[in-house]
Length: 104
Image (tube, rainbow, N blue to C red; front, top):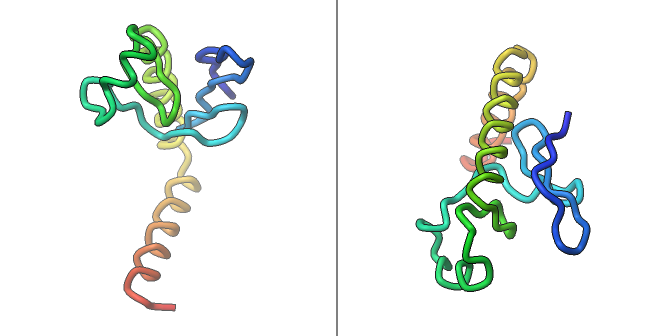
């Protein structure tokens, strides 16, 4: 289930799907970065003075950020309620760790 956050000026949808923030259905980010902590905050605020968060390349207002944070929290709750999803996350982490160590 997707939660619509906003539609960009060029008509693309910014949505939260599970634990991901998508732009036109493609993964854009998995977390929000407050503009005040962003390395390019001056440029972001020049382009969009009301920006409070960044989700990848997408600037969000305080209200839009709140919608994203609530939807991500709901996605996390749903994920934690699914034992198979948790098992798969551990399996993927183990595979990444083995690849880092050169174990095949």
